[in-house]
Structure formats: C-alpha cells, structure tokens
Image (cartoon, rainbow, N blue to C red; front, side, top):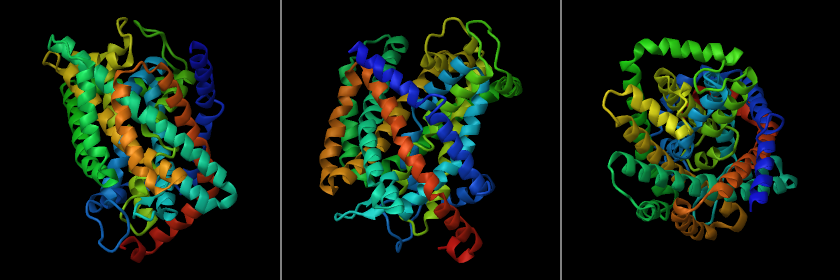
Length: 463
C-alpha cells in the first residue's frame, strides 16, 4: 500500500507540476483572456447585473434551475476547504507573495470559466427524462466532433472518480475532523465521529436524492449565507485591525516578486515558490479550467449561452478575490504565519482568527463552522458533477443509483483514513483538466464569436 501511495503521489506531482498542468492552465487563461480582449474584466459590472436578474428565470427559456441557482451550485462545489486550508497552505509554503499569484490566477481564470460556461450551455443536451446535461464531455463530443469522443469519455471517467474523492470522502472527513476537534477543545466533550457521520448521511441524503433541482434550491440558500457569514467575520477582524491591513497588502506585493526571507517558524520562500504555490492553490480553490463548473452551468434556464458565461466568470472572482483574500489578510494581519507552533494549514487559519478576535475562542468557532459548511456544500455540488458524468457514460437511468451510492459513501469518507483517497483525488482532479483545456483552446473561436455578437447587439443582450 505504501508503494502504491508513493507511486500515485509521484504521478500526481508530475500532473500538477510546473511542466504540465500549471503552465497549461495558466497559458490557456492568458490565451482566452487575450482572445476575449479582456472582456471579463471590462464587463464585470454587467455580469453582476445579470447575476441579480438571474434569480428569476424566463418561463419560455429552457433549463432546469435558474441562472443564479446554477451559479450557486457551481460555487457550492468551488467554495470549500481550499478557501481556508488552501490559502494557509499557499502562505506557509510560498510566503505572502503566493497570495498575489492566487489573485492573478483568478483574474485570468475568469476568462477560462466564461468560456467553459458558455460552451456548456451551447452544446448541452436533454435526456429522455428531461435533464439538461452539459459540460466538457458534451462540448467535446458536439463541438469537436465524433472523432474526439474518446477524449470526452476520458473526461467523464476522470470526473466520476474524482467526485467520490475530492467531492465526497475528503470533504466528509474534513467536516468530521473539524467538528470532533471543536467539541473536544472548546466544549470539553467527546463527540464520536460516528455521530457526525450519521448526521452527515441524513443531511446529504435528504438533499442529494432529490436531484439537481433540490441541490440548486439548497445551494441557492446555503452558499450566499455561508459566504456572507465567513466574509463578514473576516471583515470585522480586518476592521478592528485596519491599521495593519496596508502593511499586509504591501507584504503581499513585495514578496510576490522577491520571495520572503526566513522569519520565526517560516522557513523562507523564493520567487519560484511564491509563483508555484500561489498558482497551484489558486487553481485548487477556484477550479478554473478543471471542467467541473460548466457541468452545473449547463443546467441553467437561459437562452443565450453568453449570459451564463458571464455568471460563470464570477466564480473565480467571488471564490478567490473575495473569500480567499479575506482568509489571507486575516492570517497576515495576525502574524501567526511566522509562528513556530503551527503544524498544519487548518491550525494556522484557526489560530489567526483566534489571535485577532477579541472574544477568546470565537475564531475557532467561526473557522470550524465555515469549514463544515463549505465542505458540505462541496459534497452537494460535486454530486451534480459526478451524476452528469455517469449519465454521459451509462445513460440517464443511472442517475438515481449514482446519487444513492454517492450518499452512502459520505459516512465512509467521514470515518476512513484517506491518505490514498487524497492522492487519487488530486490525481484525477488534475487529469480532468487536460481534455477540458484542449477542447477550450480548439473551441475558443466559437466563444469569441458568440461574445462579439452578444455585446454588439442590444436585442440579443436583452433576450
């Protein structure tokens, strides 16, 4: 088993290394942003208007859930442990400068997500039972043609496997560990992991077995609540220590181009480390280019694909520029990242919130609650992704059996030792991106044409 974990770990590191996936993801983002003439940045206010109007869907348009709920389903899977643990990891390994490169990854990732969501709606299909299915496997098959179906199948297989790992077992495990730890350290009580696993099973089952419409309803309520809850908590902390924020921001920009010298328990970082860990953690957090989010956006009740593309491009902005930045600034303002007693990323974030909040262990409660909500929402979003991959591979009748199996795996992940699962999850999550990015680059002229037509014709914009 140790040999297998080591081998898979090396394979994962190669896929996610500086010579394959990271330059491919970043390069695709730069190419797509340039081809769109920086439209995602210029049209961001318009995207927020579309998001607000997307709370209600047009009765004559086709789809399953409103555009807003499709975005929330996507964010449910995106806003997760990466926003808490991933940011801390980036700072611990790459220094404060890694945050700058997370921002850059998110900004160019907006172009990638715009293209993903636009293509997902344009090339989606309707199953015999009325489900709207889309995503990389469909825009590969329908956009690139039959000779590329093998690549669509590969994506669906990778996505199905990844959904059980990164989208289910690891998230359930994170919820269980954080809740059990909080009960022990803050309440002085022993909470059995089995109890948490049972509660997760019931909550997940109630939502997941109801399918994408119920998931969209829950995500449309849960995601805004949990994001506002966490962001407001972070803003309160930054408001209390507003005098330290300019110094933290200056530290980010200075370290982004020079690295950071060793200080306290921080071992130091080079410019290459800041870029590598900032980009890697940014991509892990916002998932731009991995091909997961367009599966959710394909379910939107919308006529013009570009409208959903505008919502898709808000994913990285809300996830990384807003939520991840709050985590990063609190960590840097606290000074805890230089401490010698920090042995894990999750511990770092909780310690940072505790040290700057004026009410004892309130930070631990805030971080643990956010981590539990973020991880649970990720389970909901990834159930949609896995289900759509299964439908592509085995037909629409496989949807309900998949949701039942997916639900039953939740308590398994909550209680299991997941070293192998984490490795497999990272590997297959990365493998998903390769066929997706190839398709995005080949189909980019289609997206560029759709975007030009949309913004040049008021009638199309107002449909």
